[in-house]
Image 1 (cartoon, rainbow, N blue to C red):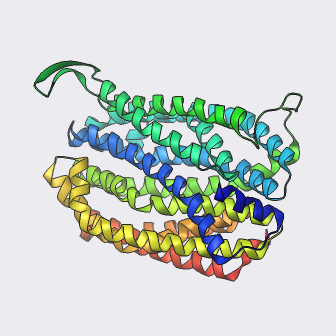
Image 2 (image 1 turned 90 degrees about the horizontal axis):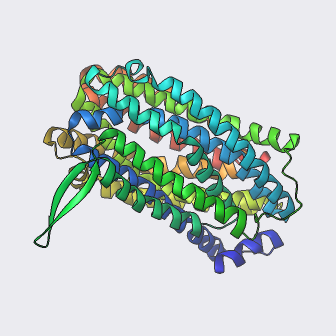
Image 3 (image 1 turned 90 degrees about the vertical axis):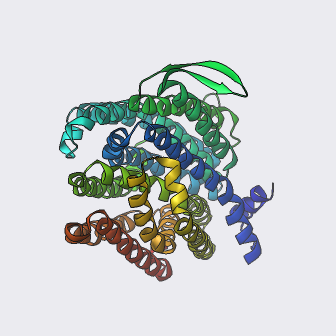
Length: 466
């Protein structure tokens, strides 16, 4: 494949034209973008199926969604701590070292995910009340969150295996498996959310079995699909990957230097996710007193918007792989060119998706909920957010490029300062007069500011000094 040849050119020190650099960004981004899109489609599936149960059911998921992102973000940080090291080892031609990193990552990720699941289970007892949710939605929110955190070992395994495969240049397998996860989520949700019922199709009446678990069924369906994909991801990582395939006689003993470096890389990313998701929890707390309709509209709008920024996250994964392998190969100038090309690609793609979201907002919201009041409010805030998408793309992709180079601390501080001191401050100032619209205006301003400061760091070149 062309992408494999071009990746080998990075490791071999071969000079690359601008066309070849763009081809590599494109070929690595497409599977990653598709994987990201399918993960968002899963959110659409959960939201639309639960949306049919009413505003309170939707609000119960919206109440704890930022908390699920928080725990998922920690899993992502653990994965990044090892995948960054693996990418740089592969770029430097140290394949045996990359395999050693993989083995240690599997052990460390399993231990950390068990601890995280236990902490989440304890937190689930009082979380909906802490977030200010109304009594009528607290029970569903509690069960939804509890089932999610108990599935964290599967989430962690899937993210780790997918991240390691991607850092080796294999974007295809994670993309296919994430698409399969989406299909499984539809099937499991269809059975678990709704009760047994009769469905008429082509004049034939079918008896469809169902568990009737409602909101809890949505979470359980997602957890089961995550479990299946985690097993498959680990299989391809450990037994099918040319780089990471397990070989007999190689040690599984943890190495202090590898673990410490993983911690050093992961801590800023984990702290960043903690602070950013913590800010989202605060945002949820700001929105919660506005009532069930604003809570549901806020949750559905976040889900709808996520389809627009998935191209940015897909390109960011490609940028992390390319900058990591270029830095590992000692080619800093090539890393700089890949980063800039990737960031401008992200800005362009998210400018298109932002424009599409502005005009398609009514259709997007109608897919998620039949409630006309929720739809109307959701459309208005989505159209506010559309103007932030280009600069949001800049921050997403630049962060990926920095992460691949091992520069995690400063970007995490930039994200923290932007979201806490700009978004939260403005949201508190605007929510009184503008209600939910004020919260989203604050978000729009903050994302534009964040994109600009990331562009400044990108062109300063300081991120390559790690």
